[in-house]
Image 1 (tube, rainbow, N blue to C red):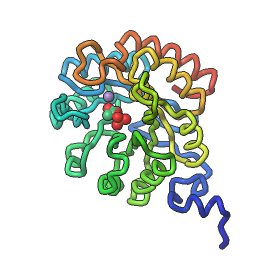
Image 2 (tube, rainbow, N blue to C red; image 1 turned 135 degrees about the vertical axis):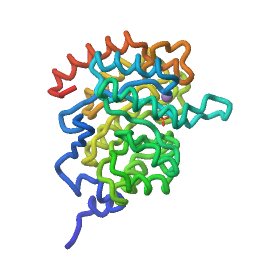
Image 3 (cartoon, helix red, strand yellow; image 1 turned 180 degrees about the horizontal axis):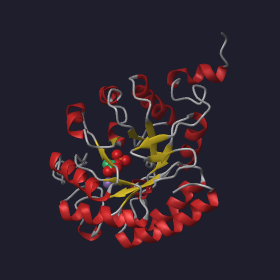
Image 4 (cartoon, rainbow, N blue to C red; image 1 turned 90 degrees about the vertical axis):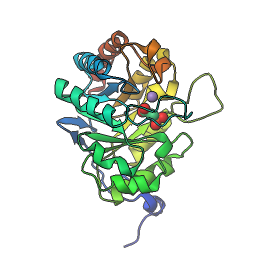
Length: 280
Ligand code: PEP
Ligand code: MN
């Protein structure tokens, strides 16, 4: 059968392309839906730092309306001297927070040897720095949990789609794409949030697309306005870093909202979601 020029062009990411599936994929994470009208807010600390910290944050963000708890246990830090995360113990504390609050959890995996440790993690995250770690992409193609794939700092939209294709073609259809800012010449912000990418990804792929204004901006005061913009362009969710004491956070404090600021953001987002006809 002859295929159109557009179809031929997207052949390298054929399974995640809109041509493969005109109906948008909705991913169900322990009862929380992502995609097509469902706009869950994922929130939590950049890094799990201890039991008290993660439990306090989990309880507070849940009360504010977040649907999924995030927390890094294995941290890909730019300097080897920076806090590298609580590792396996961090994952155990996230599991504890999940049992205490009922919130599903998402955490970043750094290499395939860690897969076993992630058995209780509801969504396995692949960070920006690993977007083209093809062995890792193939490995998470074999797990049962959905994968949250973050766009690389300097990767094109097509490269992003092909990385998602690796996971889907390796057997895992449940991939959530996450735009988290790209590196540009601008130095006032940590990265530049590429809202066009969110729109294009939604047009080009049937997979759910979320965005992370915290890593995109790097500045706390930009997070809430960007969150509103992300909802307005048609994303399927957001991921926001929060901390009970941002000034003393071991990682990414400058972009983390405190728990009150997050509660205010959620009040605002609930109004906006109603206007957009989305379930937040
Ligand atoms: C994170 O979400 O904690 C993280 C490290 O993000 P990114 O991979 O987008 O830098
Ligand atoms: Mn972070």
